[in-house]
Length: 76
Image (cartoon, rainbow, N blue to C red; front, side, top):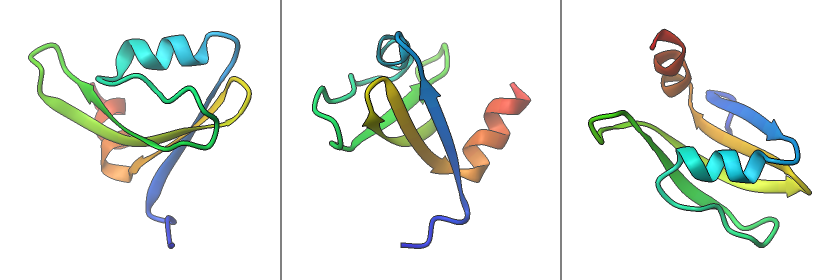
């Protein structure tokens, strides 16, 4: 699958899961390697970004989204 057009982010650290679960609409799966579609909402409840997320290794999460989502998030 060609994901060259996608934005790829890595979030890691002891509290990475807790932080990601606090900003996404649905908790990340506890089992490593399981993929979760996650939405980030603004204060009005509108979707501002969609991510595909999974735990790569312990406390290290890989997030994939369209490049446009990242551009929008940087502008807010």
